[in-house]
Image (tube, rainbow, N blue to C red; front, side, top):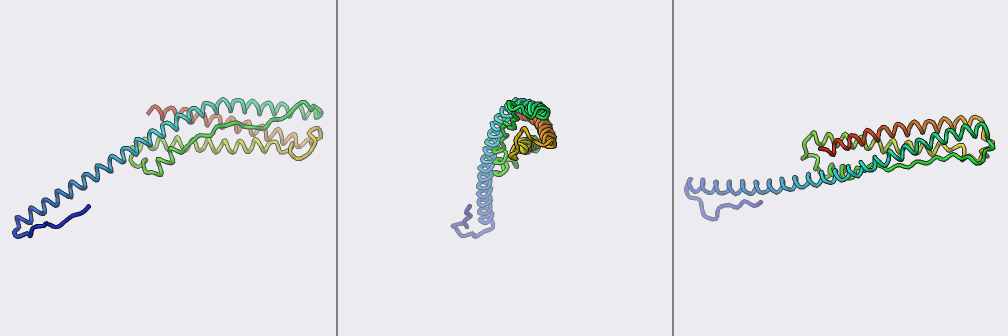
Length: 209
């Protein structure tokens, strides 16, 4: 923004007042136009952020629905493992039986939320709206973290079978460890399922807004 001195010499207070008025009006128009451009930019920024978050939440809702089905299968798999371990404990020579420690899970995304935060778009949204998003994405982070921890526990529960000992000659205490660890994973999976159910319900509520 450039402000120039008057080209003609100022001889009277009237001339001075006229020039001052012209400069003031010019500055006001320039600042108003700059503010208008900035406002339009911010409106566009918020609109784009909302649209990206909406698309991301719709994808997360679908992922949560898929995860609920996967978790139900994972929980049943852990129960099958527990039943199998009990059978192996009683009949170590039952070679046709096997324990399967694996976990399928689709993580929830937060790229749109992080982008909105980093670009400053959240600062131009109503507080209540930002709070709804913040609570939901905190819950999605909790879901993802619990999924990681549960997956690690699931894989680690197979340690006794990875020690190089013939499964038919596992020490009695190792069967106890297997039962304990697989039961613990089953509880973690059930807890994770509750978190996902809570997230999905909250996600749908936010999408309605």
